Image 1 (spheres, rainbow, N blue to C red):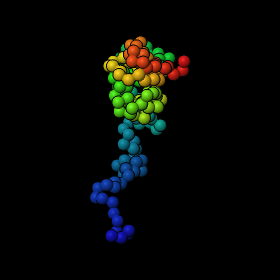
Image 2: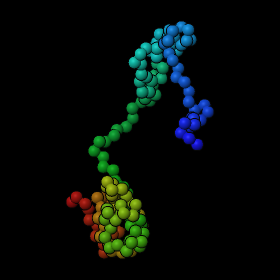
Image 3: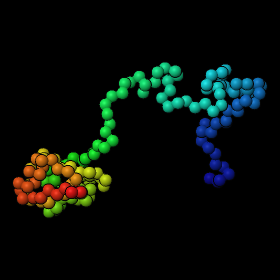
Image 4: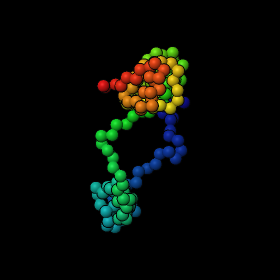
Length: 150
């Protein structure tokens, strides 16, 4: 194989359509755009969601609900997951870094501890928020629930 013998695969390269080069070319005059109308004009670009003049979907469907810009989204982690983590790592303190390290949360997640399951070891749990049942569970076995940012 030599550089001068290299060719593209059969059918992979096509010739350009040469538009607007006179009537003899078969693609002169309107340059395959048809007569009149928005799509025949230069600079035409279709609006996002345009449906040919039919009322677009985003206008047909009614507005509904409310999105609170101040909503705080928490990553929920239950007590039983924390118990499994303690058994796996033998940690005496469960904080955000440990949860991120073990793939239970992302670096920028706010974490809320929920009360499903039981805890057997008294550990310190550090998170952004706790449910009342989770605090009860943690303190029942001699642990400590510490909120971040308070």
